[in-house]
Length: 233
Ligand SMILES: O=C(O)CCC(=O)C(=O)O
Image 1 (spheres, rainbow, N blue to C red):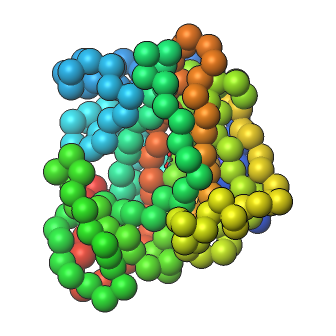
Image 2 (image 1 turned 120 degrees about the vertical axis):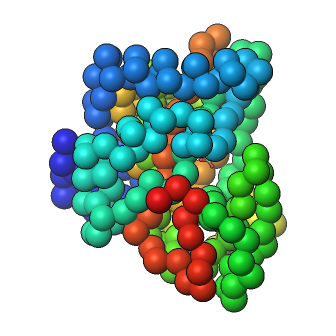
Image 3 (image 1 turned 180 degrees about the vertical axis):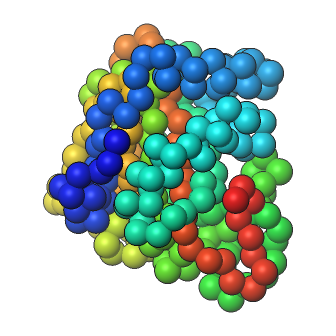
């Protein structure tokens, strides 16, 4: 399923692009089973799950599949590795919204103090760090939709082109985005929305009593300096 030129150029220009029907119903059912088995082992229906690659070999294999690696290679220009996977769910019982933000952190194996990298934090036993812009430029995230996500069901929204402005001070985000074009991106089960980590994004609560599961897999071909290593090569 090669990316079209218009999809890759939209991703470069706008910071996001939709790839419809990447997975068929059977493929999505397999992804769903793998995720739900892991989820049940982690005290049930948590709204989000980190560290999926460590616990879910099926999802690690999916991330390393030719289909996804080829797509990420076309976007990034040089073969990447999957570097992290997270599940985001919203349901009537766990109905959260996400305020405008950029994804500024990566996950690495060990904490090694390195100029330009920081602050550091630990979440679910993983070392998160904010790398310099030059690293994030070489990251793309695939949001794999496990459920249909119509506009009113917490669809993600983006400030078009905001990834080109580097790091935006979190305190200034609301002022900064004033008057800028916002695009709401509904999706169907099996679609992928590809996004640059620095695109400003947010999402609302769900208005329908259904799941809104998105498997978010990040890829990068950046070489980390100073002995730093990706946690999941
Ligand atoms: O799935 C969502 O609505 C939010 C995802 C998110 O916050 C993120 O990708 O950083």
